[in-house]
Length: 585
Image (cartoon, rainbow, N blue to C red; front, side):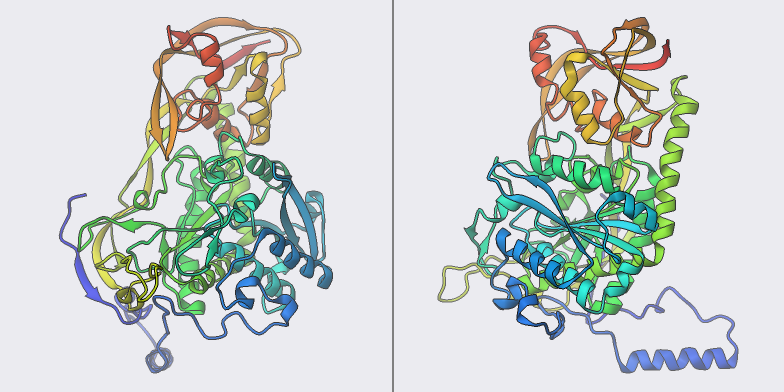
């Protein structure tokens, strides 16, 4: 994006929180003296920021052997196997009365996906959780098994919450923790550069990317997550830990929230505008790490753009954290730089997750209110505007600039030189062990905006033969009814002129060409599935069923067999799912 040339400055330590943004105005003599003493103390003991591979000595504490994770036992040279994660959870169970275990799914290789409920007092059901009034948070690691740092950080954090200095978190939170989501991929090992020496595979046993399955729901893992955790426990916030590649930015970890324009703006706006700034300051203060919005720079120096897209975070719903925002809930995806040491990456995940939980512990009631208000607003909008065709929502989006910001970055991307005397590529280049530069005046291209709009109907009518579509909707927690008698309805039909192919998110997608036409009164037989959008999950249902959604059911090929069966590749046909505005019963 064109703009003024960016300015580059060297950074040795972060600026004081007061510098450049706050000024001294009217203070009493005593107030000025107190402020001056504070500034002098701050300058005498500057906040230490850890760059490159550095971490505070002894940051993970001292624990008996039974409570040590695999990285801790191996000087951070190994990551845990799936059985070793289960063994660690077993130790927690035997030593704490605040633990319950949920078996979310069983994979095709007969491995169990396990989540741990941490609560004080112990509880085992969503009904018990609701009665407490506490905020439910779901934490997940290892959806891509070559990104194991969150898996290890979550095990350490569970230990610290149950037996260490983080016990107070359970006073106001109920935590559901799945350290090792991709259990099959975790144990499909390959040699890696640096540490850990052995890493799992990105995909599951069917070679499917679990973090591209949030809409189409074809994996047992994501189906299990939705049915056993999301639909039953209804977490107010989910956290999904990842690893980036060899990036050029200077942050210890980057965070993103839902950026799907179709999602209600309340929960995602709260995360971006309130939670992230507070967590960023707390992580700097309490852990000595600079963290920022997930992204990366362009290929220029000085860089002119900071963007989500450079880090492969799109406005589509295929990612678990993005799709979760369509439920009117809050979501966070966080990624550490791939070129840093294993211990450093674990430390960064641990630090960020801790501060997210500390924030949720203090502001959980407010977060619940934001999400419940979004539920109510979605329903009210459908009831008030859908029948008249006034209600609109987005089926595609893009990123625009929030304005110019200052970022931390390195002039050179991480090199891939070999460690002398070995055949191993070095994990981090020497220049990245030093503080990064401050690049000023960079366009912050992380603002999601809608680009293609569609009318939101009162609901959808789905032919009985598309029962598998209804089942996927129910797995998304969308209420689907069955007509017990014939009804007549007015609405719109989408006429498909061409079923084409498109490429998106590394996958082959289906793209329909055509348009909507108003339909006269039309009769639908008993047995037809009906989705009334006057429900909290209206935005998710809309996104899944709209024929032109960026990556809804059509895009992911859910309806491709049906299109072939009716010859849509040879002639114009009508999209089988009817958008109704009003039903005449």
